Each structure stands twice: as structure tokens, then as C-alpha cells.
Length: 307
Image (cartoon, rainbow, N blue to C red):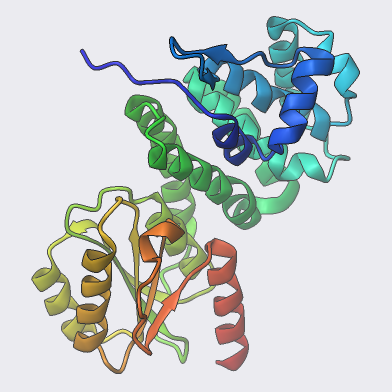
């Protein structure tokens, strides 16, 4: 049975928690918040338990607790207080709407805790609405999971567990939306390239589009290029939207985008994914790189005003 490595550098912790490396080191010295382990060759690293602990620390800080108080808690006491924060839905904390809930979802994924996940999502929806929960909580969480994929430090079973819960929520919300009728708004074809299986970003985009009344054709994951091309010619949408999550060679991604844009010269091609995948790519004139769901929201808002 395969075992998943759980060795994070301090730079990995910085990316996953949002806490600067020098701050983590200061907390180590002054409060013993996390203590690095060492490999046989004396290299410092951190494990899953320490990452979870640090994520819980950030939740407490966002809820207004002092680092000196947090440092006095045992791991169990800290965990229980964090659960209480989410269960009580501290709506007076602006920070709790975003970073704390994102990090809370990370902990829920590590602990395979459905109840904690539902508490966080439900409180966020009550507080800032479903659409803002998608753009400001769920998608930033998925970006952090993407970072973990990039450093090969995520258990696929844990990721599948939390992805299933998110998918269930989003699909239910999409089902509640009216089917858009023909209008003067742009229409969209959404798909993932062949062998691309991480569909949540595409599904979240589908929700944002449908919630604003845009007509969509949703093909989903792992779509052979020729099959997508046939449907694209049939429905003749204004925009094609896709994601690249797998760590592919730059030339492969660039070649795919070039072909996609050449086959649709009169269409806009929206695409997104881990930024390092697109480094050095010379983008075709009709390609638009989305810098997250908030960027897509801005484009849709602008299109809604124009229509």
C-alpha cells in the first residue's frame, strides 16, 4: 500500500497557511507553536499534524485571539476552540469570512470531517451568500489544495472526500437556478481537455455563469478534442472556457491553446489553472487567462452591463 510523504518545508507552510516564514520561526521560538522535525541528514521539515496545528492557529488569530493565549493551549484545546468558533458563527469578524474559513476547510479535509466542513460552508453562506462563498472561500481553498498537489503533499482520498462534499453543494445550487433562455448575453461552452479530471473549478464557473443568466453548454471532464470540436461547431457559443490542473509540459499546454484558438478564431478562449503551467507561453490574441474566479466575476459583470 502506498504511503504519502508528509514533509513540508517552511516555505510550503507559508504558501498553505498564509503566515510568513519569519513569523512562523518567531512563533517557534517565543511560543513553541510548531517545532520542526529533522531528517536523518538534519534537514528541517514539518508534518501534517504541525500543518493542521498552524492552520488552527490562524483561525484563532482571525477570530481575535492573542498568540500568547493560543500558545498556552494544548493541541486538543486549540482544536476544540476552533470548532466552537465555527459552530457559533462569529459574524462580527470580517477576517473570519475569508482566510479563517479557507484554513478551516483545509483542516476539515485533513481530518475527513464532514460536520466541520458543513458548519463552515453553511455559516459562510448565511453570512456572505452562496456566490461569495464560492469566490472568496471555496475557490481559495481549492487553490491551496492545488499548491499541495504541486508539492506532492496531498492524500488523494482526503481531496476526493472534500471535493465530493463541495460538488454536492454546488450541483444542488445549480439545479435550483432557472435554465437561461436565449438572450443578448454571451454563451459559453465549458469543458476539460482529455485526461483532465479535476472538475471543481469548471463546475464553480458553471454556477457563476448560470447565476448571472448566461447560457452554458457544460461538457465536463476528460473530453476528447474532436468530440468537443463537433459540439462547439454545433452550438456556436461566443466563449470557450477550460482549466488545466495537471502538471503538463509548457509546450504541451501552449500547443493545445494554439490549436484551440486557431480552430475558433472568432471566439474568446478563457482558460485557467496553476500559473506555473503557463510560464513562457506566447498567448494567441483571442486567449484570456483567468486569474481566479473573481477575475471571471469581473468579466461577467462587465458583459452584463454591456448586454
